[in-house]
Length: 136
Image 1 (cartoon, rainbow, N blue to C red):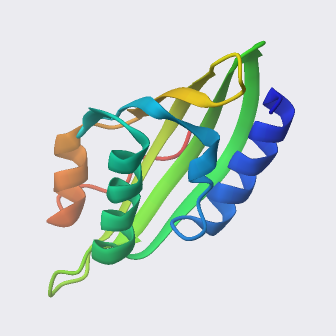
Image 2: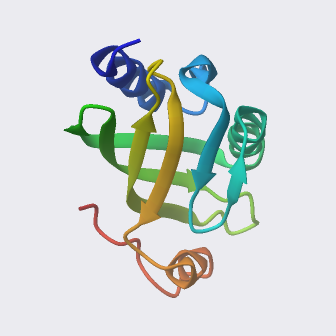
Image 3: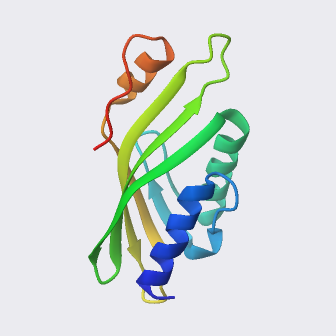
């Protein structure tokens, strides 16, 4: 699959997140890292998305832009938001970006997420101590 086709499918995945994700875009040994997780394997990636679908209420992943950064790399800028299932139902928003790298077969082999806020700022949102940061 070429990078344009992969980018089109990623745009669709963001629009339907966390449902109907294109796990077939990912290599079996895809490397994933974000500020909370680090692992290798598409099955672990599928489990993480499943956790979000089960635990978070009304999760939404808004794609602000997608930029091709090289022949086999692209970057997305996004905001992930949800309602936390706690009695006071805090609204959480994390703006960030993802760096994707493809192998020669056009599969995603690296998915690196970065946040525009700290883990402490996210915890502060849970307890109403701070407002969500603005998207990039």
